[in-house]
Structure formats: C-alpha cells, structure tokens
Image 1 (cartoon, rainbow, N blue to C red):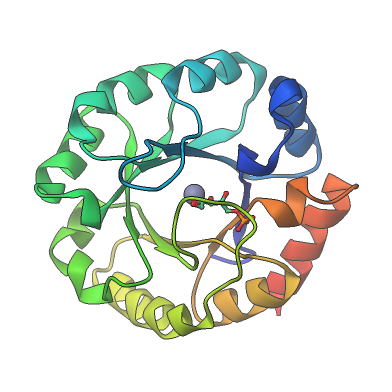
Image 2 (image 1 turned 45 degrees about the horizontal axis):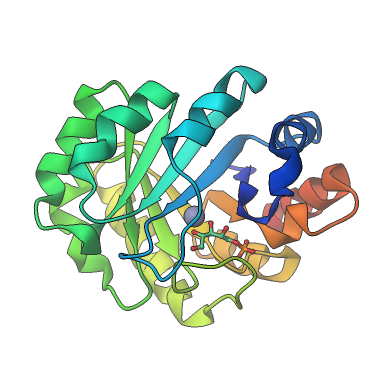
Length: 220
Ligand code: DX5
Ligand code: ZN
C-alpha cells in the first residue's frame, strides 16, 4: 500500500475555474479526486451536488472519490453513481441503516467507503468492514477545509489498520482533514494509505510540487 494515494479535495479549488482545477491536479500527479458534498444539515455548510460531479466527469480520468456528508443519503446514491462516482463514502453517523446503504452502493457498481467523525470510535464500523473498500478517518470535524489536523485521531487510525488487516481483505484507510507534509507523515506511519488534501494542494502555487511533497513525506 505504499506510497499512499493522494486525493486532492476540490473544496479548496477555485470554483470559478473548476474544470481547469481538476485537469491541473491530474497533470500534477494526483491519484484520486476527492469531492466533498455537504447538505447544510449533517454538516454546517453547503458545497455542491451531483450536477457538478457529472459536469466534471468527462474532464478527468481520475477516480472520483465522492464524500457524502448528508442525511438522508440513500435517496441520492443512484444520482451520484450516475454522475460518475468511482467511490462513495457515507458517514456511519448518518445512519440508521449503514449496512443497507453500503450494499446499495456496491449494487450500483461503485466502491463503498465508510467515514467516521472524530467523536466516533473505531468499533462503530466493525460490523460493516466486509462491505467497504475504504475507511475514511476524519481528522477534522467535517464541514470546512483548512482546519487543523486532530492528532487525537492517530490511535484510531492504528486501530482501524489492525481491524482492516484482520479481515484479510484489501481495505484502504484514508485520512481527511488537515493533511499537510507533517501530518501526512504521522497518518501514514499510523497505517493510512490514502491522503485527502485540500488546502495543502489547492492552497499552494505549484500543485505538482505540493503533491510530490505529500508523497515524499508519506514515504518515510
Ligand atoms: C472536510 C472535507 C475535507 C476537506 C479537507 O469536511 O471532508 O475533504 O476538503 O480540506 P483540508 O485538506 O484543507 O483540511
Ligand atoms: Zn472529504
């Protein structure tokens, strides 16, 4: 699983030039493209929906890593699958029927991921590990880019790495929030193998350099 995958989050991109911004990170060496959907209900912010994702789809060959911060989420899964999502992450806190939600994502031909907020213990996803390809550990409270990485989540990453490995299945552990060169090193040392990076890519003048720096830090 090394080097870990880098998934720039377009939440920190220039929204007035979104297609160019997506093309730019693909050229700069991104592995996946992270797309944060916020509903103003599950999280205290609004971002964008399936329409933007669908419009961006033909502009990029990157895997679209769609992070749904919404409740309810089930009525919208098909819409995001049709928009071109390769992975759909739902929150375990968005419940109540996470097991069914993950099965529905798989049935739509999309790779399911389960996301956990900082207050949620790793055991909350224990019963759905056989249904997911990715576990997304939030290292900030979801809703905004540019927040500080919560080092309190490192122990959770370690625990989830052990739990994921024990399944014998290939499960990636992604880290989302406050990832920069310093925290990328901490997160990957704890067992993360996918790094979402908003500010630390789109907030930098040179995307290629920014992505290479994260990859370099993660390799240690
Ligand atoms: C936060 C989002 C993140 C966000 C990360 O709710 O899920 O994906 O874009 O932004 P940075 O990397 O700036 O913390
Ligand atoms: Zn996200």
